[in-house]
Length: 240
Image (tube, rainbow, N blue to C red; front, side, top):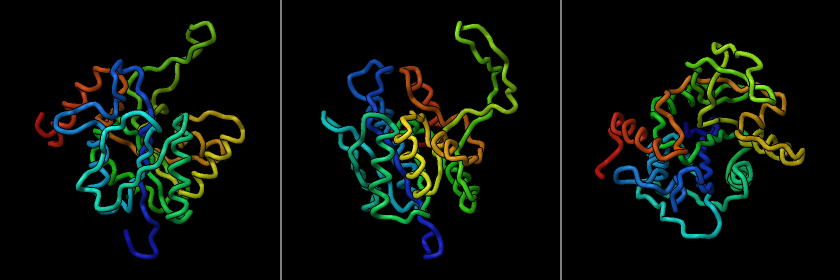
């Protein structure tokens, strides 16, 4: 994937969040899982993939940030200061990439607190979307019956779960288009919770690529236990 005719693949990891729901002094991405932090597990997924040209890590400004350097980066890991919200951090990372890459390059935005992404899911996402005109996201089909509430907290309707998916990451879009979409959302004063939402506002329809339920996001203390189990299954936990 490195010849001149192919767009480069970049990974952008917003890691400036505080993770208040974890109830810990350290942000969740710096908690330990076996021999590594959550963030180091996440980084290793991409730094061990030779198809990835570089990884942009967007970190919070100020405070004590644990070292995230790794012998695996081989000069492919770049640190950028974050913003007030996730979308601000992603925009900062995209501005950095705009000076290094091409508007046609692909950017895979991945949550720092998703350390259990199976490598085969990453490979499937890239293979599926490399020639897609829009891009898309990893997602998991809903296995639960989902209810839409009204303003009084009562059921307004039952959603068709055959058409409902849980958005996961990475979310993979062209550098230029994603940058334009996030800037447009900011100008409009619209808060977007993921990159696909910004693209949808611009009239695009991102493709859904089915991903593994192991690709959990660590948000609460009990999620760490589940992550340990999944990393052990992937032989990636390391020694405690």
